[in-house]
Length: 143
Ligand code: ADP
Ligand code: MG
Figure 1 (cartoon, rainbow, N blue to C red):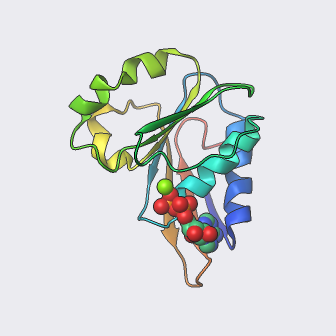
Figure 2 (cartoon, rainbow, N blue to C red):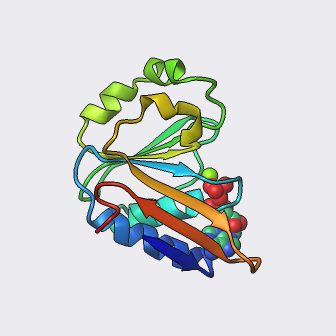
């Protein structure tokens, strides 16, 4: 599916809608430049899962955990990760087994750790300042 968003709020709404249909253990892998709207999208996903907390960028912590919704949300930012090896050091496999949704920014850096059933979300800037093109592909993203 391809969407055009014209504001951060629209991007959040697309994220919320995607998250509402996700099942436990799903990995959502993001690609797209700095400022593309990845974190805004994940903020919407949290809302779609019924999480009350406001999502902030986990750049300095690698992963933030949000409980209290329909499913837990684990929000990763792999910007500073050099390889998938470091991912296993922070307990990637434990996160996968915890029955939540894993949202992964800068998934380019851990491509080899991603399985075939990953949902992909690519965000690109469009023509206008606030325009974003959002492409969602993958098992549940097709719906
Ligand atoms: P990323 O996580 O990809 O680096 P962020 O979500 O942190 O991006 O930031 C996106 C920035 O772009 C924010 O400052 C936001 O206000 C702005 N923005 C403008 N238009 C949009 C849009 N349509 N969708 C998402 N963010 C937008
Ligand atoms: Mg971000």
